[in-house]
Amino acid sequence: MKGRLWVFVIGFALSMQVMAPAIGHAEQGQPDKEIDNPDLGHWGVLLSRFENPLYSSGPVSTGVAAWKAALKHLKGLPAHQQIKAVNDLLNAVPYVDDQIRFGYAGYWAATPERFFSEGGDCKDYALAKYASLRALGFPPEKLRITFVFDKVHNVPHAILIVNNTYVLDNQSRDLETITHINRYQPLFSFNSDGWRKEVG
Image (cartoon, rainbow, N blue to C red; front, side, top):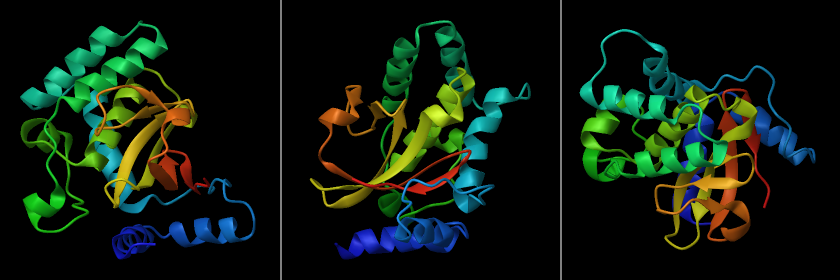
């Protein structure tokens, strides 16, 4: 396994107290066991930052206001149309690598305001898509932000998987299904209910 991948995984472990128990369950032959009442650490904070403005009646930035308005127009559409529209909407935001912008990977001060005004990296897309679909009524058990190793580019990456079927990926303009994606090696995934180690 490449050195960058280990740095990526170890960084998650250090930032979340729950990661060690999750790995422990996997070693006992229960790789998909959810963690009860997890402490999501930095990721929980980031997820709250992206979700909270969608439920607030207070003033928001221009970008966030446009995001909220776009989601309002998607309410009531069939689920598949909502999923595709959210993927298209958020993939239109410019990609900016944390390493290039801040000089290091894993920037933990991301906000939706910054994402919509300046762009973001793969974790920001995954968080924004998760928050969008939650606001449209998708239950958390249907959504998993999944950390993978991109075997083509040889780097860690984050995507959103919906209904254990659709892959929402900022690296693809198309709405793909997990059965057609073989470039990624799954590592860990989470939603607002907890973490798990992925197999495959």
